Length: 426
Image (cartoon, rainbow, N blue to C red; front, side):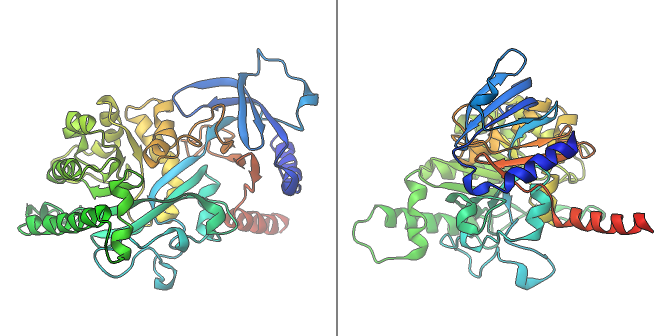
């Protein structure tokens, strides 16, 4: 069955120029909608790249003549495209080679620096992430106090224009740490109060105050940095605050109230579970830091990072998972397995899926088209032989973007098959 499905996909991809306008039906798949619901035997109708029907294949009759293409998934699992937020994927190829790193610029306040135009759609690393079901990324800058402006990108496109899902979705603020010191996990050291914290925080306030004045003034001298900030005060652009400590989170909540920032997001949020009610009342979502890591403090439970998704979910805080850290671009392929770990530590399977699909799309502001497999949304999805949250069974057999089939192989698989074939003969 797998061989026949692959042959069908290759055959259909030969006609991509005429694919749009066709009517495609995916039948007999175990559908994970992305919003917490499932349908064990689904029939998903796709016309012009949009989902026009989602029905139970066991109780629904359909006329084959009404569809140009019918693909029998035969019990495989269907998922909405997973999303890797806050990622340098597409902005770096080899971390050890400076010439391939394009995610950081000089200077402290760079809201005008845009990752969209730096996104490398030809990245080989992207191939290996796409074929694990991660179909989107939020290309995110690094460094400085305000790193720049991110964009949401699809991981299969001809160029950065074609890959763009949402241009300039928000600016990224690296909130200063309230503490200093500490050591790595094998040599823990005590932390102390950051004596320069108030001054560092005031520098951010001064810049925002200047940007706010610029945004409401009718007669100003053009300033590229401040121009990039205007939409943050108009509610058209998100402000992503990178922070994790309790003091940081409390100060960010007050900061957002002071400057009337309509769409703030906290990236990291290690201590967010301690401020559940305050965060929920403030309606500030969390992009949780990497699940696969060690605790922040020596006296924290060793499994706290694994439990954080469950703890936030219990308190009704909107959250999603992200993967910032060492080798984050290539490790974006492991995002589904981080959700699998969160599932093992409290989340239900569908809640874990939501944390890397619909919840992420809500936080990024693209949930009107992506994040779940529902009528009216884009047919951007993938099919896996088994549970996509388990590394043993995540084997992608079909990928669609707006109803268009995408290649399901990558250069690593090609090399594997090449040498496997060579040595099998010998």
